[in-house]
Amino acid sequence: MSKVLLIGVTGGTGGNVVKGFLEQGVTNLRAITRKIDLNRISLSKLNNAKVELVEANLDDANSLSAAFSGVTAIYCHATKILDGEICCFWN
Image (cartoon, rainbow, N blue to C red):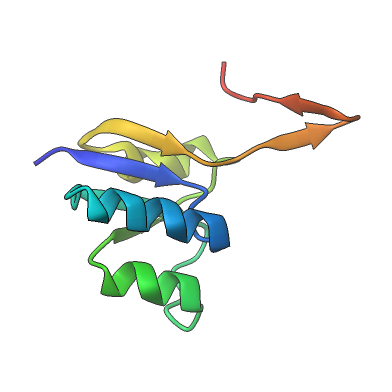
């Protein structure tokens, strides 16, 4: 089964994104986190909701291979502001 990769969903707003996917019946979810630590409440909630957790870092291309394997869609909830402007780092 194909996966939906979730980026930037381990915070408060991201939890609502995951809830929305699950409420719509989208259950083949995988979320990136820099470190899988089930003592973190947000990661514990994702794990309990059967979201697959994978360790990866967006600043390390080599760590992203497993995260993107089998993925057919990506949801990215992230912004970076530099000098007052929102920047996109994807080339």
